[in-house]
Length: 346
Ligand code: DAH
Image 1 (tube, rainbow, N blue to C red):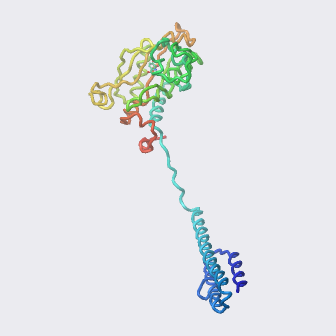
Image 2 (cartoon, protein in one colour):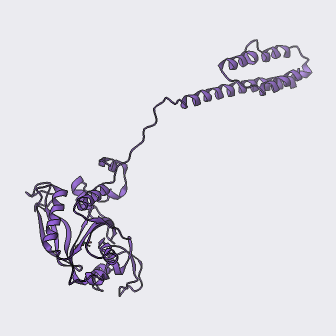
């Protein structure tokens, strides 16, 4: 009887099935009431008591083995059925989750496209800069507070007291790109430079240590303050609506003379006064001015022959206005729930 059991064990271990019918045939042959294994159990009753212990053990092992095999065959049959289903070529494809542009990118692209329409080209410069391009060539005095480590992130600083042209830092404004463009190309120059800037500031709802600016530069013969004003008026009306008014307030920047700050009439209340414009009717948008002759000369441009204007604006603030975002930090957190709200034509 032991040899019969062994034969069945090896027979069962070699069996494979390719369909439900064969699986059922396996069950009937080995595991049904009148199957081979039950027949052996009948035979078991007739053997001598001395053989019973070992044969009983073996017989139980065979039964369990056959049951396991049956379950295994059933499972593998099931998974090939599933696989066949997943191979169904007529099934619709999984949908792609389309992303959307970041609001800062949308705003930046809007600004670029307005200036491109009037002949400005885009130029870019490095985010890691040296003191020379960020400060010295832009006419910042050696002791200017912007050079202080409390305002600027330094990567290497040779002499904390006196600023050295070899100091390496994260640019604090995109005006550094002006210098690079002027050094590399000669007038006429008409360029805008969007990019990231870094300042050593405490992070709050209205300020961040990383933000974005767009710098503008126009240099040619006979460029006047009137050209600056008209260019900015064109920009403001394209950006904030055709009824927008601008006003220029005198200001100071080391690299421009005269310098001004530009306000636009509040697009939310139309200039009547609301809590966004703090009831003044105006919103501050950018700094600007006529490029200082010292800056032109530092970049090897003849300041007797050429004049120019420059302007610089942040991207976050106007984007906050446009999208009514009340916390600047949201722009940097990349929370999908926030970003998904800016679906637009890509
Ligand atoms: N660089 C200035 C800033 O970061 C912005 C600025 C003001 C740029 C006047 C200019 C300008 O080109 O003419 O605050």
